[in-house]
Image (cartoon, rainbow over all chains, first blue to last red; front, side, top):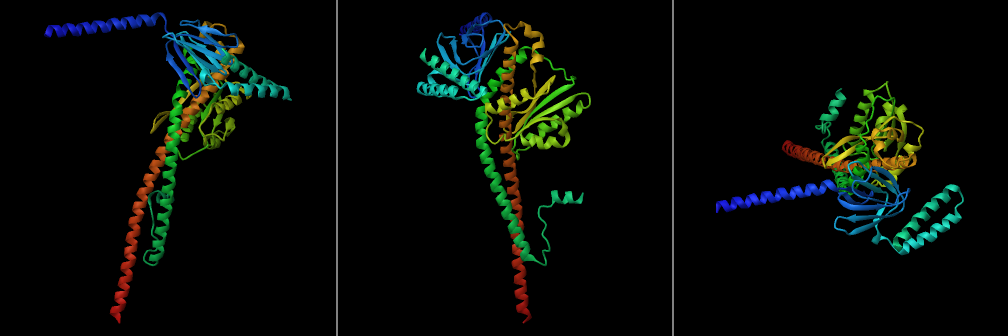
Length: 163
Length: 293
């Protein structure tokens, strides 16, 4: 009886060791420590995800684990996160920054970030017409540029909703 | 010297007790009433700050992850600050509101020590957010002030506040070699710690050794990134500071209410004793008057 118990314990220890081994192996070949946050919300903190697609001023690009270290600036658009289990989540971001570091950690910090399903199509349409008016009505260069930025953001929002 | 002693020790001095017993009684009553009112005020301030603290603490959690994200790049590039450089800048996070224990004075003390440490060899400019720190630092470091912000601390900080401060720092005509951000890090309800966070200029960043390992970096990207990171770090520091301030105000007001309670107890005792003494004296007067007839 005692022997059986001993065996049982041994088997459990072995299994645990093996599982730890498996986990550590899995970690070594692809691990991304992904952080995605806005001042008000945190969507991912040091999470392991498969891939992240981000819109930047130098063009949209995808980030896989072990991406070359880089910095980029976010532009209004959709961030798509492909999670470990294969599902994907989409967020709209207004602006912010992306940093990919040597240790394969990725930080996407957005000034505003919201899941796509939270966006209101009606409000976006109204925003576009208002922003268009403002672009046309703007008197100074600065006001015009500001209105232009608003319009671009709204257009990106609408594009995000259409897809 | 004597004045200081008497102020801190004597709780209540009955004046001319024997001659004007009634007036003294009135004095105590007035005093009792005013202390009770003070206690009411401190109690309600405690309630208010408890509610504000709960909110600040809730908002601190996402801000911490956000701040960690903003710091990650600077940590992984392993930038070092050379504290002997001549042009330095210190950004101080305080607020407009007082009555919150040692939140503001603690941060100013730390800053004063740092300033006095390397006085003479370096020029340090101050960027002060909040009236309280400005009031404390103005006397000694008036000529070091670069920027100061007020109308801050009444409401919970938002990203726009941080962006405003960051913009002003970027726009101001001062080239710094070394910059740090001073703020209170919230630990528990009763404790916070003054923290120094290094800030880097774009030139400094571009010269970093590890920056070469980063791909596709041009001046524009670096500038945008650094500007945004500055705002993010300031936002993070603001949130930490706001949470420490509210928690500290809560404890300070709790202690004040307790002290007022003790004072009320003592005054009540004195009041009752004096009243009894007055009654006794009047009785003696009546009785002895009757006996004399």
